[in-house]
Length: 543
Image (cartoon, rainbow, N blue to C red; front, top):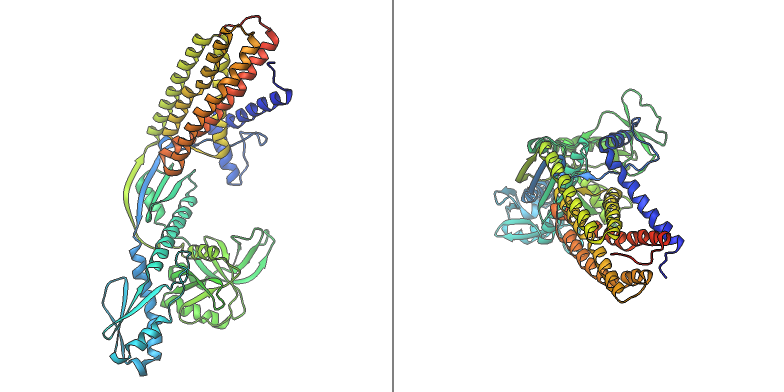
């Protein structure tokens, strides 16, 4: 018989009410947005109840307005920097063997090579062996078992280059580091839902809603992070600790509830940091090595010589990212940070250490500024498209199926509400192509109802009673509905995985729309019809 158990009815209506509650904040977008901003800033929040959902559908760049940049990271610059940084170590090691290799002199050559001429050409093999001792294992899974340097000889000249595995690892670290720096810079501005993602091997897509122009966004990206190395006075868990004159109280980045009391004047700053990269300590455990310029090396060496056994805080943007204990005098401007790191953690720490400046220059291949007026026009055009599409579908369904069409129309309105509820729940960003996906969903949403209603018509022609015709109509149309929507959902999934930007925005709304459409067509419409049938008990029905 035509019936739905009570628990199923409660579950269906509960899901509908929950979805509409999640969608409700979007009806008061400005008020809820100000409330969320106040909560995020830790300020008193008014205008919205704490007991109601406050998630919003984020507006994309084409709806809110803002700036769009496509940047290419000039990874080749990092090779030259690495070679320059190797020269002091190479010079020191060869000077220690001067009796064998003779005089040493730096030679001009390609920027990604280090060329050193020795006085005794007969000792070139020994010089190559000495320089090869500088090489370290490549800190990446693809470079396992390989070293970061290739050392060769050409006459009386020692040539040092990065290995191919190290170049690939360096390229990846450079782009990841650039992403981290850009993200930290933009987050400081307080923009909503910026899109910062890697495209290809060495390109970064940057889309920031609410920024006035592309030039303003480029200026934000170019800002230097504040990195300092400061002496630690003590560690505390009291967040009410008051700093005395000459002190600063800063939180630990990765250890909630922990604070450090530091001397306010740094020993060295990030402006004097030349390099930081993941490496391994003498026991083969992941660590992070770093290097200062000559001025920073002198100050760092003097401080470590006088403070062995004391902790030394590494501070990035007023947060302590690490506080290692000085084990010995660190001369030469380079050192190593050890700890219970994984390879991933040491890589991330190296990225944070170097987040004071971009590791390489950026070439901006594409720049666009989208004004808020254009975004407002897009929203208005999207509203009109949705209203027109919805009105046309509602009129068609009512004209074609009468009362049953009215039930389908109610489910269609609930479907749109559920789409926005799910978009708000997952924190999705709505773009202009996303609005197109919603419009398409409105047109597709009644397909399942059309299949069911036509099937009910056929069953009525076989002289079955109305209850049996409705039941068979839903049962026999189910397979066609599921097959059609599964294939469309697979396409939406492929678009999401392989696409980017606007394509993903379209696929998200399309995929969510398919899920809600099937739910409303199979369960909500059926529940409405069953509820009506239980009350009216008609002898015949018109579909």
